[in-house]
Amino acid sequence: MISWIQHHLIRHGRWIFLTLLAVVIVAFVGTIGNTPGCTTNRSNYQALDFYGYDLNSERAMRPVGLRLSLSNQLNQVNNTDQQQLSNQMLARIAMLHLADTIGIPAPDPQIIGTYLQEKPIFLDPSGQFDRDRLTRFIDSVETNPSLPEGILVRVLEEDYRMQQIAEALSGPGYAMNDDARLQAQRYQTSYTLETASIDYATFQPETNPEDSELQAYYNENATRYQIPERIQASYIHFKADTYLPQVGTLKEDALREHFIANRARFVDAYETANPQTDPEADKPIVKFQDVREAVSVDLRQAQALRLANQVAQSFAYDQYNKSIPRESAAFKDALSSEGISLNPIEPFSTLDSSNRGLPTPMLDAAFALSEARYFTDPYPMDDGFAVLIYQARLPIELPAFEVVTPQVKADYAAEEKRRLFYEKGVALKKELEAQLAAGISFADAATQLNLGIESFEAFKLNEAPQNLNRAVLQSAIDLETGAVSPMLQLGPSGLFVFVADREIPELSADDATLQQATGFLEYNSAMIRMNALASELVERGMPVQQN
View 1 (cartoon, helix red, strand yellow):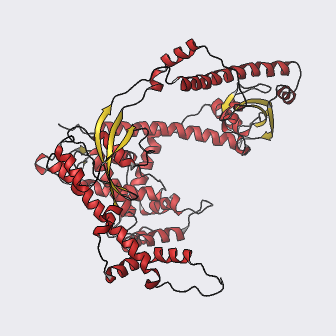
View 2 (tube, helix red, strand yellow):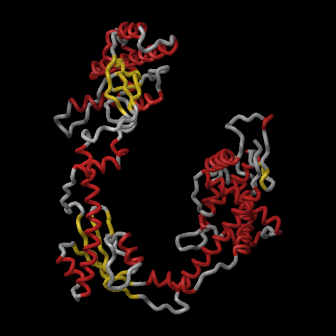
C-alpha cells in the first residue's frame, strides 16, 4: 500500500495545494512573524524559535503549511480564515513536538494503509473506503511541481501520531448518566403544541403625550436628534459635451476599429431599432455601414469624455503644483479660463453621501480635505468628470426641540407602542392562564381574546414542522405540559406557546439514542481537555519577540 501511494504521489501529486499553501504560508508568516512585508532588512532579522521552527522564516514554515493543507484536505476540513490557519499550524507543530518528546513511534506501513482508508475524503456516501476516490485524488495532483516526494505518507504518519497522543492524553471522556439521559430524552420527546398570536401592526394604543413629556423624551434622547458633522462644498463639472468641438474629424480607420471593439453593442442597438417583420426569415448581418453614424457619434462622445478627464486632471494638478489658494484671484482665473463655475452642494454627512446624485466616493473623499488641501481628484460622472471643492466643516448640531417636534412625537409613539405591547402580552398571558384554570381549552380562550390560533400535531425535535419558528420550539422545550409561555415578540407579531401534550419516553440502558448521547458528551468532554492541552503547549512554546 505504501509503495503504491508513494509511486502515485511522486508521479501525480503536484498542483491542487499550491493556492491553499500560498494562503497558509502568507497568512501564517504575516500573522505570527515580524518580517515587514515582502522585503526584509536582513540586518534587523530576528529568528522566532517555536519548538525548533523559525516562525519568521518562510523557508522553514512552507513545508509545514504544505503538510497542513494536505491534512486538511484529507480530513475535509474547510478553513480559509487566516487566524484559524495560523492557530492550526501552531497546534500541529506543538502536538508533534509533544509526540516526539513522549516517544510516540511512527506507524508501520500496514497501519498506515489501514489508517488511509479511514480518511473522510476517500469514503463513499455509505462510509466505506472507495479506492476510485483515492485514485482520482492522486491523479488530480499530477502536475504540481512543488509537492515533495513522499509527502502523503509523512502527513499520514503525522496525523496518526497526533491522533494517538490525543487519544492518550484526552482520556476516555466523561458524561454524567443523568445528563446523557436528559439529552437523549429531549430528542425523543414528542410535543403537541398550540400557538396564539397577536398582530403588532394592528395593535394601535392611544398615546396622547403632554408637551412636557415630549420635552423630557427629547432631553433624554438628545443624541438621536443630533445632526452629525457635515461638509459644505461645491463641485466643478467638466461636461464631455463642452469638449465635442475639440474632437475634430474622425478618421475612417478609427471608426472601424471602434466598431470592431464594440460590435455587439452596436449590433444590438441596430436590431432593437430595426426589428424583423418576418420572424421566420434569416437574421441579416449588420455591417459597419449600417451603423456608421451611430459609431461616429459614440466615438466622438468617448473622445470628448477623454478630453474632459484630461482637463479635470490638469485643473486638479495645477491647484496642487502651484499651491493656489481657494479664494485667490488665480483660482477664479482658472475657473474663468476653462469656462466653468462652482456648483453648490447641500451640506452632507457620511450618513447621506450616497443619495446626492453625485459620485459617492467623491463625497466620501471630502471628509479628508481641509483648508490646505481643498480639492479632490476628478471622479467620473455619467456626462463627464467632477472635482469637489471643500469650503467648510460644519460641527455637530442639536436642533431645537421645536424644530424636531414631529420626529420626537413619532419616536415617542413608537417606543410607547412597544412598551404597551409588552404590557398587553403580560395581561394576555394572565387571562389565558385564568381561562385554562377554569377548564376552557387554549383554542377557545385564545379565540375569545381575538388571537390567531395555530396547532401542531405530535412531533419530535428532529421532525419539527418547517413553518414552526425555532424560538417557539426552544420555548416549548423549557415548558411543562399545560403551561403557557410569556409572549414571544417575533417580527410582526407576539406569540404565546401552549404545550398541549408532551410524551417523554423511558429509555433503557442499551437504547441507541442514549448511547449516542453518552458518546457525544464523552467526546465533547475529551475534546475540551485536548484543546486546552494544545493551547497550553502553544502558549509555552511561543517565543517572546524583542522590540
